[in-house]
Image (tube, rainbow, N blue to C red):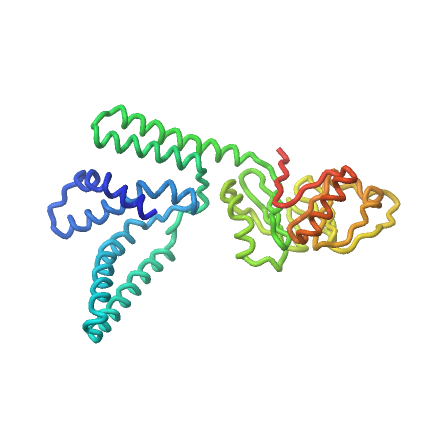
Length: 330
């Protein structure tokens, strides 16, 4: 990203800086720093959105601190290297001063990060969108260098197309109704409906584990949480009673303990049978006890056990799914 930032400064800084003349000396200096931040942001924004799914809203303010501090830090760092072997006492005080500057810069960055609305999060930006964005930036550079307005119109057209695609995808995602089983050691399920989501998870699941397993798809759908239901909780969308779980209109049975035979008089009607915790399963009696459409092998099972379940399902022609799995309801 540093190379892209340099490219942005080379191509766009002068154009941005010259677009507004500031007479005041200090005002001109601040505007110059802002122009550098804006120029760097133009070329780093697409790749930043693609990898991090977020946009720092206070980047201009952080640039006012980081840009001049970076020059000072680099200068003092070089001076420290030169004086370390020649004048150790002087180098020692330079090192202390350098440490204080770095601490001061980091403190300001962390302060800005904690301010309200410091980040716009959950921006799903695909690889294709990133590539198209850089093509658009190329046409913007061509317009600046060749002063041909057709390149500006092409840039604006591509930019408008990207915005339109983003909004259309948002509308389509809003209409999805899905159940998502994440690849996690503990139960982690999202139910998406009407642009909202409800999360069902084990109490043992940490926030870090949940974020690691689910962030990518949640960012893609950009569906804010409607409410949260943990073990034994119920809601209008979710019901759980022992091993029975209903999400929307989908009914599941959770097999968490070794299963041999339920000895039930008639098969239990469900949509999905969920195998968990690497339990023993008697595949010979499954059809007698359960009338299901598929088996779901979740992430709590060991790799060897998962392979065993898959082998048995294939031998008996039983439809199966493994996490992470998405069940589309409409």
